[in-house]
Length: 422
Ligand SMILES: Nc1nc2c(ncn2[C@@H]2O[C@H](COP(=O)(O)OP(=O)(O)OP(=O)(O)O)[C@@H](O)[C@H]2O)c(=O)[nH]1
Ligand SMILES: [Mg+2]
Image 1 (cartoon, rainbow, N blue to C red):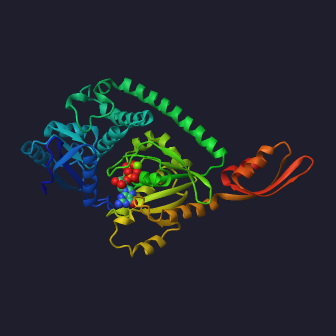
Image 2: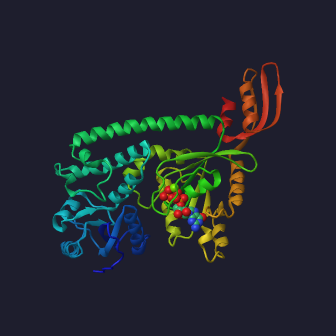
Image 3: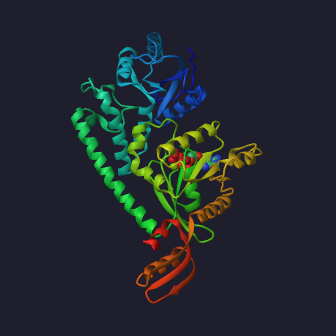
């Protein structure tokens, strides 16, 4: 067993971190990456990693995930170090979690629960809170089987935020009813958002969405481009809600730019589902700005993880600008040029210092042209509104009036072109 003493903070919940290193199938993420990320997640939850152990697991056991002798080692360690909580880097089945708690006699938390906890801590809007509660209840429901009603026995701290004790103490039926209600409320929110997007689309304003790994600098970039005043912080999952702002480009074109929740590798499926309304901005965007923290030691893996989430959101094939961010943190930039060349559309910037923001704006304008189409249409003479639309949103080459029709030749945004052909 490899034990490492780490840090000391008086009031924080004392955590033993258990990294499960599967011998097969988890080739991409190495132990160090898991360790770093789990530690960041625990810090974001207000915990202090007092000890960490790494267990290679060839074949997970049904009862505890790890072998019984390892469980006893953990129990001894917890007693010796007065550990409050043991956090596993891998998800546990409800039965495994209960069995581990019975032997180790501390709270046992898995990665999904940890992430849900951070979301619960950071949710501030009504919609954000509903989405987190839905994800938490969906996580909880299958774990209630045969468990009775003792879910609150473990007291406060990590893994107990969110729905709260009183809600946890209701039975399965009431939780199911609550899930139905939350889904209904969130569907209403989703339709309101859809309406807003439709109005915007009708106006022909192209939509750009900032996506990327959590902590990549998406909100910092939104602020740099639009003075949105979005909260930014060095930590995981700072932004949970979508925020859209209009941006007028140097050539006077207008776009809408949206910031949204950050991604992470192996994001719990419940979470993606529950954040459907928020993530709809990504699905509906015309162009994505994939913000990547190039100073992160594992940025290549993080980029791949973002692409996996985009696939899950059916948005992977959208036109995407790779925004290579935090270049101010690099000591050596020589290799960047070669790296950048590997992508169709990539720009190196620092959202924090403002370096090469003009280059990014230029790229955005250039990409906008891919959203413009030329039209040459006959419309009824009564449809003067379409003539106005062409003038407002596009570049009009000619307008010719006939007895019953008008001929318009113009270049207009793709998203409004269809209206001329109805
Ligand atoms: N040095 C440097 N730091 C940056 C840059 N961009 C962002 N940061 C810092 O990175 C941290 C995260 O920035 P955010 O803008 O909150 O990141 P985010 O992608 O919105 O993160 P989530 O909302 O958690 O998904 C903050 O401490 C920022 O100040 C940059 O270009 N250079
Ligand atoms: Mg953010």
